[in-house]
Image (cartoon, rainbow, N blue to C red; front, side, top):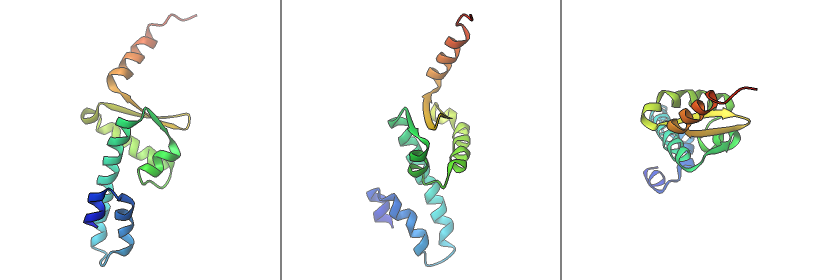
Length: 114
């Protein structure tokens, strides 16, 4: 398993849960899965401006959109570390810099109304 992890074969690492010799080992695999998810999330927010929700679910090893929404909420708690806001809108997951988000928000506030 360590070799798969080092090679970046994360799917194989995650599938190791089915082959565990002991139920006690599954606790550690769950922690590894959480760590992999965070690493994939960090990479995604640096690599994309947005991705389709279905692609985000697959990328982050989640089961469905409900789990994605929960994960997005957890990422909001990490905002000080990442400076990236995650937003779900129109079937996509958006990654936006806090500074850019604030700038857009301010810009909208000062637009004249008709």
